Amino acid sequence: MTEHTALRREIVELIPRLRRFALGLTGHQADADDIVQTALEKALGRLDQFKPGTRLDSWLFRIVQTSWIDNRRKAVRREDTMDADMMARLPGQTDPGYEGTYAVRQDVTRALDSLPDKQRVLAVLVLVEGYSYQEAADATDSPIGTVMSRLSRARKSMMMFLNQEDQ
Amino acid sequence: MSNDLEFPEGITLEILMAYADGALNADDTAKVKAAIEAHPSLAEEVALFQSSRSVLDGVFDAPMHEPVPDQLSALFMEPAKDIDTENVTSLHAARVKRSIYGSPIGQAIAACAVFAVGLFTGTALLDKGPSMQSNDSELLLAGRLDAKHPIAMALENTGSAKLVEFGGGQFDAVATFLTEGDVPCREFEAADTTGAMIGVACRRDDSWSVELLLAASPGVAPESGFQLASAFDSDVLDRVLNDLGASTGLSAGGEFCLIENDWDPAECKSE
Image (cartoon, rainbow over all chains, first blue to last red; front, side):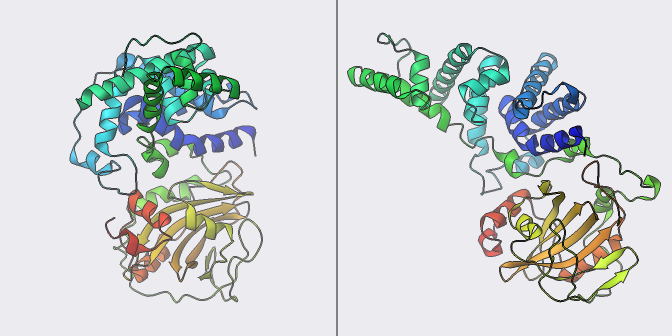
């Protein structure tokens, strides 16, 4: 078995997490999967650049981030409408086994949409992916002080946004 | 909630966040606690940070419980080595074409209790004695799986289209469905260095019974990864599925419900 074969298998195992991370960044599963596909294509073309012994998930999250940011520069904002097929695929509406409902996700997505890109990335890494501050710093190539500053402002802004929406 | 709270000396928004996240050492935690006692309004900031974590908890978890979409898994499919790919049937294409209800062949296959060399560990796959009906490259097998066998554990706990590896072998559940008698069954693929197999197993009496196990492209060593493209007789699979009265495949949510409820369909009637 080649080294890249083992690496590819590890990447396959991480796909659900990459999709979740991208969903936190985009708010839409279809957009998220497009971002993940772009990121995976890049990663598969750069396997030689991955340093064994380092965090594969952080490496992939970085690629997803840059793919997302690149895409945002080109994207036309999608109308926030869901057709019946897309609604049927959402958890919470038709799948009672899942925690999140579409309404909750919509609110939270709007709150995350209000954040600057770098704050949003950190919010998703720490609050959705469960990264520590240091892990988030490594995944974003940022000093930990910068991470904590951006993250604290992101969380405060997000909650103020949600509280205003509730009023 | 305050927008322009002035913090006591030594207290910052970042420190309050770290306190809310349990990320401070014991000394700093004690300092923040003392500051909160002296300035109760700081507790609002801490609560805000705690809420920001709870409000996102699980909201984006759907992808963790779903099969990986084909558009992504397709990036990792590799052509089989030393196989005449012109004569190999793509399993994915075969599944798309195959209709669970549509097989024109109406004859039943007698399921025989069969002994087979176990996958992955070399231990017996089945806990009953052998009989075997073979046809060139195919083996027809049936019997109850030992609960500790890797395939049994994978059937019990793994969602469809999630590749699982065990010491040199791989398992991938293709779909989950119910029979006419509401018995949960799963179509799956498994492979190790001796070859690849496609199977159907049903959960009866708290254990998994193999209804069918077909060897696909025997002798293929999957050196480059899981061999998703292989040749097998889909008519045999169709006959077994028809005999079982297989329903259409369950949704990700329905499958998840069964896994969470010890495969009791009565708990998932709404799926």
